[in-house]
Image (cartoon, rainbow, N blue to C red):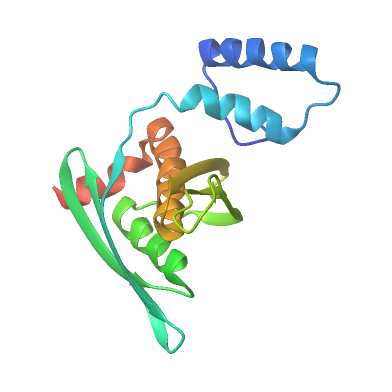
Length: 172
């Protein structure tokens, strides 16, 4: 509960089994390990927000702009935003669509493959209300990977909270 999770009894039992298995293998466990265990349980949730389209305009002398189109229950929803950078602009556009506001607390990008066309993986941690979740996304475009990571985290939040209905109700 201190980490922001409110698990049902059956979810807690599954998470505790994974915890015990991991504890048998490792000497020390940390909050991040517990978060990963719980989030693994929650990743089987339905993908509520799906990326349909992404457009970025950015440059050294331009204010970064993003247009993002998501599918929510197969219906398109689009928003545009500006930001401190192209990723920030995308995240703000997603926040407009979902009705959720994620506070980015950790962000990293690494290459999974090599070469100019390397596949990149974005890993993030966000806080929505009092809950921290992580997200991952991959693409040869690091901005798209970043958007996919954010949507992965937002889907985890939405699948366990009724807050996902905010935008859907407004748009009906």
